[in-house]
Length: 184
Image 1 (cartoon, rainbow, N blue to C red):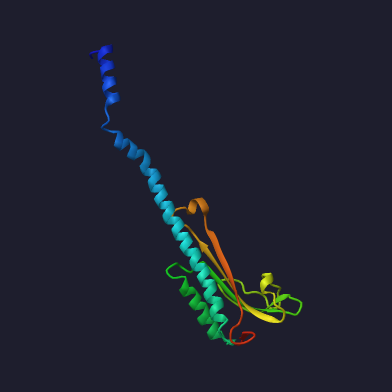
Image 2: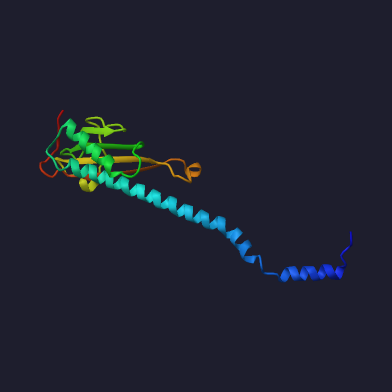
């Protein structure tokens, strides 16, 4: 082995310090993980916003359809609940819970459930009290309440956030009569 003299070692270090050939590769290696992370985060956030938007559209569709009739039979309710799950397309509906209820607001402004139907959720008990927005508490009226809940599991960030519960509810007045009756 030959020892490198101090002057040769100094020249080698100066040349190495001036060499710019690998700078781009080093910069790319440092920035690539950050850029990939940002891209995947944007994709994940966009997906979650899309699902949340579908939840809101589903709640609106449920209330809208149910409020456009005077009477709802069992087969009608099945069709309404099926239509609501169709609104969620292309997202899977295995974690989708939908409930539609008719609520009577009495002369004192108290709101109580008249009837309630659900798919994958818990129907509201007949006669149970419901808290409604004060602007909707018109004495001696009926209102349709639709509630939608969706368990969204992020594709990439599921280990960080787990399943997120996205939910929305919609209130609508019956359109063709003062109330919507529920038959068998």
